[in-house]
Image (cartoon, rainbow, N blue to C red; front, side, top):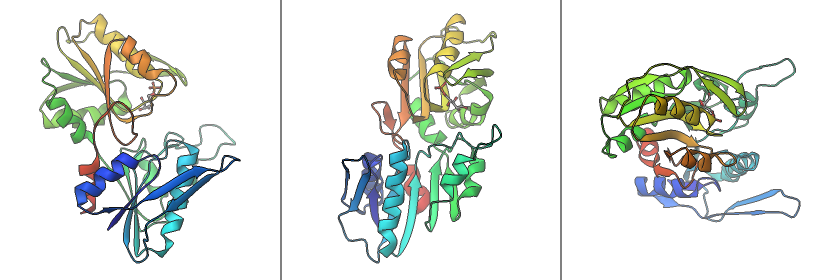
Length: 280
Ligand code: R5P
């Protein structure tokens, strides 16, 4: 098998190749003067089993994924891992006149099998036209937390949507977990319902699938601090971190960590092993 790295997932793809003990194909990317993306797989993939790894954080990343799939038309089989599937939050028609963007994008992926990781809404998986499976990286986050040596840790979901994730993250280390109620006011403003929490002097790990503006985590952390929490960590699968999100988290004395589905400075844990285990 040959692993093909998309431009957004070069480190993760190399870790996946290492985990499989197989070849990492050489790829190259550049932008044409008009901004269009040029993508090329330098190594020969004819009659190979290929595994393309590419997150689609930006529109150009998505184009890159389509280009790689098309370049592999000469391969024997194509498996695609989309560690972070962008637009998954546009998973329904919220207002008349909108398209379901997640569906529109999923339908364009032509491969033998597709894998995503903690896609925002697993309901989107049915839109892929080939066999598609969403992998759960909760245990990867749980193992990382176990290694942090925390004081009486408590795992918190900042909203109802993250409840299942918090429960699975906590399960491995048999940690306590709880959840908060969130109301979204605008794209980057949320309110977390006030309540009493038994967190005095305990280290707390807020876990969410995505950290984007950081607003959700910061609001949850404010509530935890009012209740006397010790150190506050924010763990996510996908560290999107738009604008100055990382700076705002740091200023709020929150320690962020994420997986390498999106490669950032906070990617302390890798999903390479999870991908290997799923594909074996
Ligand atoms: C929303 O439902 C997601 O699970 C996250 O809670 C959300 O994307 C986080 O966004 P932000 O960091 O902008 O508050």
